[in-house]
Image 1 (tube, rainbow, N blue to C red):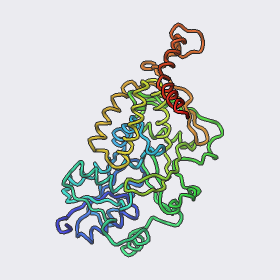
Image 2 (image 1 turned 30 degrees about the vertical axis):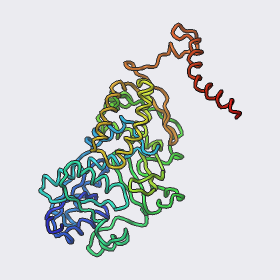
Image 3 (image 1 turned 135 degrees about the horizontal axis):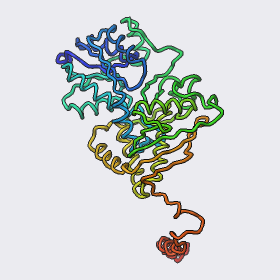
Length: 405
């Protein structure tokens, strides 16, 4: 296949792996390499990556700002679905991969490239996410995955290769783990974190202060929602990127959003991941608080059953699959009434709901739920309700006791 490939668009981060891959593709395939760096909120790394790509041999370095698209078209839809993988993970990495893949495929089309390439390993989820997304968008796309092809066995081999080819190596003993950042979160894995009994190294976290060092006074934040999407913070309307950035700042100040989990990868193994998602954690709780007022009970329960399926689809790389898109239509339809505000309290790593209201769509009726006298609810009606609900239980018990249990 190498003879048919003259130009490759590489998903390029500027890190050790993708820098080595850039040079390896040039030598192994004899192809030109276009470095594609998607800005999904990782910060100044994007410009550094562009310069480094050109210095490493890329014929072109594309840096595309996808932050607004990432938050509005990927993060917000997933949060409308209240998706949470295995009860903890807000899927910052999982949600970034399809938008990067979309940009990568489009760059290949625009530059007339014969293939795309990525730096995901053969053990991880990202290889699946990148490639499933690419094939869904361009079925005839060719994919180069060096970690499944070359004879480099690990990080030490990559460092040696980089030194041999005069490629700067960013990995040092001071950072013995890998890190991936975007506007929604930062993930940490590998290295010292591979032992699930070992705690995260001191000073590792970038977005959040240690909870014990957070302010001694709590802070309150009010998040406004319209049809399931956050639109304001403390009464100020903000764009999606500005809103998430603001919530990251507020949550990070109070140490909100740290998660340390052992998760089940799609490829079959368990892995330890450490994440910090301050703004996303605030959004998740605020969204559910507004939903508690505005969603019908059975609709909410059905949504929660399907949220787990939705999260699995996204985590496993099926963002562009018809089942995820169909489920998204359902999620978005029931969000039409999710309009209101939630007030949350942030303190020492915790975020709790302090209040919620919806002037237009609240199903909560204080006149019905009050413990004081009311003219709405006849409490004696509950007797018949309970007798009907207990009918099968009494029948079962009579049968069981009749058999001498």
